[in-house]
Every structure is written in structure tokens, then in C-alpha cells.
Image (cartoon, rainbow, N blue to C red; front, side, top):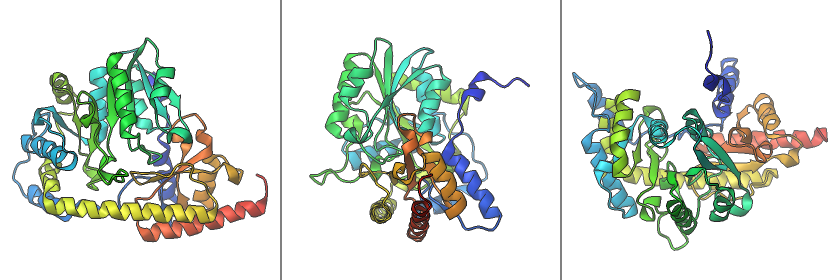
Length: 396
């Protein structure tokens, strides 16, 4: 059987690969602390779980419209009004089978072979894999601590060419947990509009962002750029990773193409998940999610203190999501070596920076703070012993 060049070229998703190795160790009887995946340990809010049980009792769960249940599209639009003060037509909301399907549809709708697209390095690997799958020429733009590992206007101007057709930005970012300052993001989008480039902005972690210095919530890009294509998900803020439900907000002109693509690629998002997700937007469920957001912030602070005690530097303090991007170069190991040995010797699963880019990727390791406090504390203790053992061994 001839495997396609596309399939042969795609790199493994290392966060998942280290998860597989962790599962093998667990099957052998070891307790592994899993800090490799961004998977909240809480699960969905109680009202959402109850709604799913009710939906499961229905005699028939037919396909929904390809764009999603109208009531859910309206609820998502209402969430933007409530959480961000942005008036949004439900017609622009496309409910998808996870944020991955939102990226699939938006990329399919916008990208032609040979189109150049700027993406920050480091960044979530699947984003650029979707772009590449549709023939985009992905230009990874190196970033560093001076720009919070995010694209800025200066880098966009420096790296763009006459072939640049679009930008993909995630804020807050996976793997760094850092955000693009709102004024900088608006300036980037203004530049892109002037140059005829589309904007895909991944806001999956937006509602887990810290407040701005004045106490106001971090705004959606739609407040500054209503023409941007926004990707979001029920997985992180609402804790619904395995439910495979997300959404996109796109310009009205793009909606018919998104509908045709959804009809052909996967018909619709899962009906039971859509029915249950309506309960996400009740005051009780939002209160639960806000309390969990505070808990994630406290866990992140716990991890940052623990890493400081161990002597593992975090060059940029995250201000959203639940990730910490650690510089392990001082240990004498590169990222892959550090993660492999931490898993085998300390039974702590992490993700090497090699997943997220090429520029200095070998120096960094991502740690997810989405695990329980108990696991975070134990994981930090194990990492501390592991790092101290490296120091005792001398240069590697």
C-alpha cells in the first residue's frame, strides 16, 4: 500500500506520544504524574453533565444542521456579549467537532496551495499541520522572551512578503501561556487588513486569561478586528475535552463555504454534545467555570514557585491558559533528553519544545498545570529529585 506523501511528512504529536509512553509505564504498575497534556481534571460543569444524561435518554438524536444547533449558535453569540461586550450575529457562529474541526474548516476555506502564512515559533503544532495539509507555505517566525514568545508587528513586517496571504496567532498561546497585548494584536490585524491578509486567531484559552492591569478582562480580537476568523473550544474553559465540541466565528461572507465544507467533511458536530453544551451558558455553569479559572491561576502560581525552588527557569511568566514553558538548557540535557529521562527515571510526563517549533525548541519543555494540585505537588517533588540527580552526575 502506498502511503501519501502528506501522511509520511507529518511529524508525530509529541504530547500524545509521551502520553502513550506514560500509559505503558502505568500498565507496568508505575504511578505516572501526567503533566504533558492540557486536559482539565475537573470535567464539565454539573449542569452540563446532567444535560448530557437527559439527551442520552432521547429516542432519536438526529443530525443537527451542519453549522450547529441554532440555539447553541445563539448562546455562543450571547456569551460574547456577556463576557466581552461584543455584539455578534449568531449567523457568524459555526459549531464544530472540536476546535480542530474549526481549524480544518477555516483553513480549507482560506488556503490555496502556495499561499504563504506567518505563524509564530513556538506555537501549537496542529495549527500549522492543518495549514500545510492544504498546501500553505508556512513561515515559522522565531520569537523569544523579549516579545513574550509571541508575534509582534515588527516581526510580521520583517517576515512578510508579497506572497503572504494570512496570519495565524494564538493568544493566549499553547505552549507558553503568554498573550499578545491587545494593542499589539490590533496593530498586527490592522497591518494585515491593509495588506489584504486574512487573520486566524486561536482564542481557545482566552477565557482563562488573567485580567488586564486595569482589572478588565482580556478582550477578544473581535473587539478590534470584527473581520478576523476566531477559533474557540468547549474543551478548556468549560472542561469538555473528550466531548469534541468547538466553534468558529467568521465573517458572514465565509459562512456558506464553511457550511458546504462541514456538510462534506463531517456532516455536523455530535448532537448529544451540542444539546448538553446549552447548559454551559447558564449563570450557575459560568460561576463554576470562573471558580475553576481561579483555581488554575493558583495552580500555575504553585508550579512557578516550585520550579523556582528547583532552579528551572521560566523566561516569561504566563498570563493565561495553564502552561509553563521551562528552559532546561542549564541541566545539560536538551528538551527531548530531559523529557525522556524525566519520564523513565521520575515517572513525570512532560512535552518537549520540539513539538512547538524549531527555533530554540531544544531548550524548552512545556508543563501543563491542568492536573490536580496533588499531582502537581508530587510531580514537582519528583522533578526536583531528578534535577538534583543530574547535578550530581556532572556534565552529560
